[in-house]
Image 1: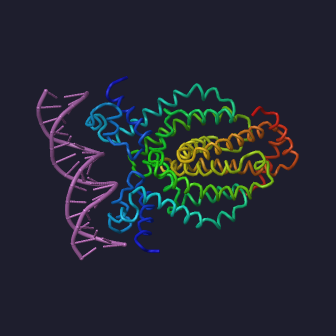
Image 2: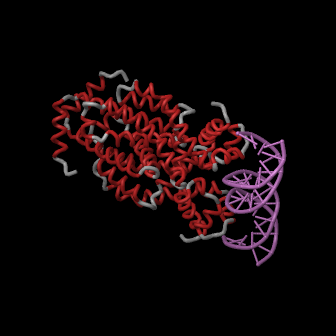
Image 3: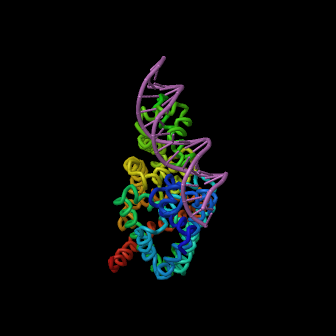
Length: 206
Length: 206
DNA sequence: GTCTATAGTCGGATAGAC
DNA sequence: GTCTATCCGACTATAGAC
């Protein structure tokens, strides 16, 4: 696939990453793609049309590229390790999604495709969590689908945070890894503590 | 403080929230502030100059407004409850910070003030966590400062996520509350499990 | 300090030749 | 499908009157 449409899609993703939502103009994207500016409108109707198409295109491609790695995850710690890899990958679309999210707060056209792009990651994490947390107190007392969404949101937040405070972001990630270890231990505590936890939870108002 | 400079600062914050980083132009901000467009440059030199000043100004003001609520937090669950309130507050600057973060990925001028704005929240959360988690396994095995940074990043991510999938964001928050309850129980398990956890942690490679 | 006016640039979008 | 050329509005920033 090396036709103009694909070039524009990749150009849009590159531009979103390197110049942000505020710099994602038809001209900038066309330059990045190495094609004529008018073709943005000919093929996609408008800049937002191209951005939404690019988002759908990119999310599909990206998650597939990481599918095998997701399948190899065996613990929360593994998942965070993979998250580290994904965030370190220059070509990963976390930054692109962050920019589209920023734009979506203000431009309703962008919302559906951005939500779809996010859901690709969420589904993958949901799948992994369901597998990794099966038969643990976590899956019994915490909505795993909700947790998958929270993790996706946190990854986006960390990606943005990294852009303004690399050391702080590294510290944040390290603490999450420590927390994951702690939760893994919680899993390993066995049926006795599971019972203790269950009775404790029953005692609560909410 | 109702002079032009202050009007512009507030106008900038409003514009960032309502029109995003891509819509934060001198004209839009001046219109929101009810002043002349040229004054942006007279008082702040450039649009980015105004945005950075507004960020510093807003973060200071906001965190102070919530200080008492932070002081009242007694548990992780309380903290998430407060987070819910802050995210629901239209005038809160989470959205503004999210937009500035998106811009900072691409515009180095914005980085220092955005980092400062974020650190105001991080410090507050750090303070609360230090108090709430004192004498718990969490504070013993997890870098609390890192956790504070992770929570700030997650809140930013959730704020953005909410803009494209309200139901999904609600689910994410609910699952975090369940997780917080679980962690609170971990705190209550007493010295025996603390010892168990400690030996388990020693057994690990990392 | 505040205004008008304006220079110069960049943006979205379209018309029409090839 | 792709190009050039162009319209027109919005943008940053400045000059200069008040």
